[in-house]
Image (tube, rainbow, N blue to C red; front, top):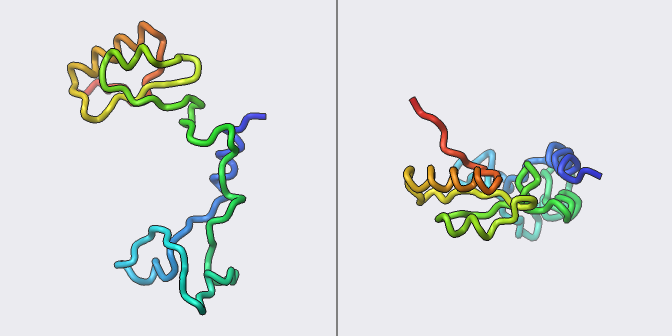
Length: 125
């Protein structure tokens, strides 16, 4: 079975989890916080109160943490890091702290080793 497609299907059905009263008060924000009040309708799983994160919403274990392309991400800082990558299972993501000159060198070397780069340098005009 293609677990990546299954993960995408599960992700589309998953509701957005926001903290209680998060839409009403801007200062609370839309991030998730567990309800802790003794009379909290959300904590007591009342349907009208909203959705709580539960075990059934997770991804299949086989694809947990993988990039949507199916590769495991490997963070690269220099040319030596590319030699540690298995091109069949892993893809490289060049660190944000790497400059343009070294990024071009890393991309050339990755092309030689047939390693997929997840954040390639774009040609800017």
